[in-house]
Image 1 (cartoon, helix red, strand yellow):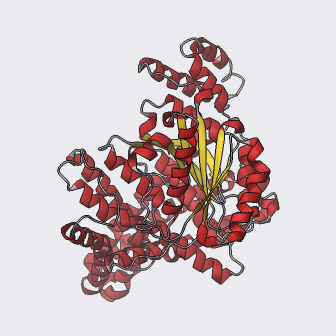
Image 2 (cartoon, helix red, strand yellow):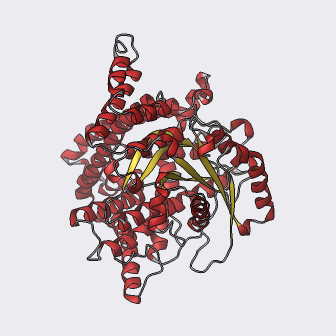
Image 3 (tube, one colour):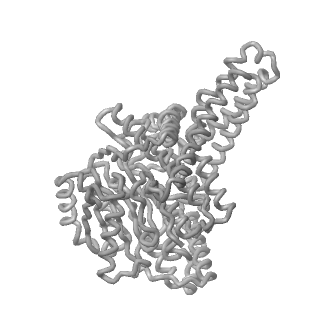
Length: 559
């Protein structure tokens, strides 16, 4: 079968037309939902009351559902944080003889109150039994090596060096890690010189240390991160091939310049890779947290990025629908087989999953890992510049909607390899997510008030007028309870050395969340609607490297 060209560069005019029409669909649905609801509220305000209440209830149920799974995901993260992942790798290598040892270690732990360790060992035993039942051939951890591509188009040593230091002090042996700084040629000689200096300083700690300078203007490429990291990955492929290293034993991680891996990250990644039955057909998604400079950042940026971490925690509870996001890892063999990242798309982190899913005809999954990668909250010299940077970043994230028309084109092909229910499930999830992302904030914050305004005296004579305070009171009370849980978890998720000690500081951090309706609407929903509108009109956005600053004292990995 000919490989599907996962790109905006379509093979013929008919495909281009179909993709163009499919690209208009998300914006049409979003704008029709907003405009139609506004018109309905003005023309039929009494009937609109029912619709608005139904939307409020849907929003509430969705919020409670997300809060429940956020609590569950946080509990798993708290348990997994105590894990010695290299020991898990060793137990996995031992196989059946490790089971009595694990059972013996669990004895008495609950009586002593060590419930986290008990749950951890119970999970480890269950996963080992699954491996044994499937009769999987588990590679030895000594055979696994890691390639880490760090996209460093911009960013000084204060941004890059903490991530390298974290890899040096990883629980997984640094001698089996190959960092690659992916530098853009157009960034200038100063950026390359800085990369060479880091290479000189850290090379002795790793298997090796490469610097790949991506030339500007390669035919078929856009100025996007995917083109840069693809060039670096091709360089890594040649490096590994010359040394006779099997791609099937190599795990590739693609990090942003500010990514700082927790000490257990590569050990946890090795364990998940070893135990997965189809390890070369899977991506591995950690939990991104934005703690590197979180106490220095603006309140609105801090709330938004914490919300992004919570969203990924919730998504991790549903692996069947999980899609790669931000910094993630995958089999290097799979990356080579699918043809690397798309070189003309901005949403490279999600696009690589969809490209692999189509290439392997649906036989590809994302494995959630309850281990963290810490990154930067966006910061700029002024609040106004930070606002613009945050908006552009969310616009770029929302530009993941560009995958939708390509997926439609791929799934309509007769030989797509995916069942009709699977295609419908993937497309519906993507479409529903992007439409609700672009519209729900506007509806809850602004549109839901319109029926009461336009109904006037007529509304005050209805049964709903007398019952609406009870309904809205219940909705808002439950919403406040959900928000309270979110605030508590936001404080608990902070590393111990960055949790505010004074009561006043905790109150300030908690109070920031009361701005969430406006922060979410104007710095998340609006960029999403903007992205869909631009796609509908064929106005592609430009890839902009986010401006990030961080003081050295705030740099460092999670504990």
